[in-house]
Amino acid sequence: MQVSKSQRIIAVVFLSAAVPLAIGAVVGAFGSGRLFENVPLHSAMEAAGALSAFVLARALLLMRSHREDSFHHFWITCAMLSMGALDLLHGIVPPGNLFIWLHSVAVFTGGVFFSFVWLKTRSRVAYVFVLAAVLLGIISMVSPQAVPFMVVDGSFTAASKAMNILSGFFFFASAPYLARSYYRGGYDEAVFLAVALLFAAAGMVFPLSGIWEANWWLWHVFRLAAYAVALRYVLHLYKKSELEIAEKAVIEKAIKESERKIFQFLDALPVGISIADSRGQSYYSNKEAKRILGRGITATPITQPGTAPAHRHSRRKETT
Image 1 (cartoon, rainbow, N blue to C red):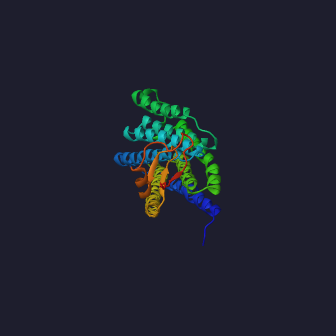
Image 2: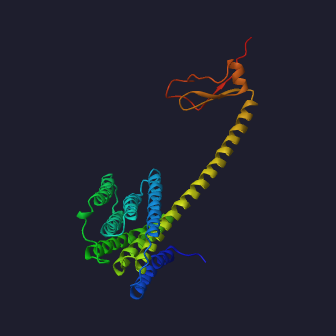
Image 3: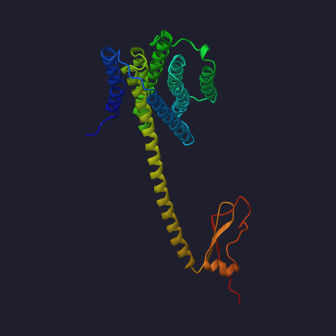
């Protein structure tokens, strides 16, 4: 049975938003209090997410040269670049106030950029803001005492909760646009819809968690799942490009074979024929033309510049 686009959108919303939020609510109600501290595992998860973000950003940048209407791809690229860099910084600092601050800045910046998919334009100024967000993270590492309080006695402050909740709202704000684009377009927007909703769910579950609690790990899993979906999309693009390259090679081979047969036919004609390019340069002469002209392929224009014909005929003149 063929699944409609509307049904797929509903499935993506259910699996990427409704289910994660429900799981987060249940775990928050019954799984709080128990701590599972594992710094190396956390760092590995953040590094994997950052790498996926950079790979997706690179793929989207390459796609921009082939698609002029991909405004939302530009803003998603900015989101991935800023989140990837800040997540990487977040993963290498020890747990504490700076630790939570870097994460909060990462998701907040990413959410803002995702919400900009509604804009029908793109500007290189956005890259300045990406760089500013990364510089803010670096400066925060240099001067951690200037960072706002994000966690007190193991509990998140109102500031950290607000930044993460707002990030969730920003990610959710991009969902209607991405769903509509998928309904009108193709595969890409469904992937970005799932990514946005998973990031949104992670932001909403954050206030229900405490550092190293079950829900803490749960929203990390949501974010890692979002990056995994993005990475799966990049692999899809890679396989698609490989297929296109293979098809192009087959077409080029067929064209060369057709040219060979055409030239073989022309060589058998008793009429001298030379074929010129758009600049009037001859790049093929059959056997009779070479015999008449007494030379091979000529490198001089056949006619005046700008008026070169696609071909010309050379006929042997009979003398009496």
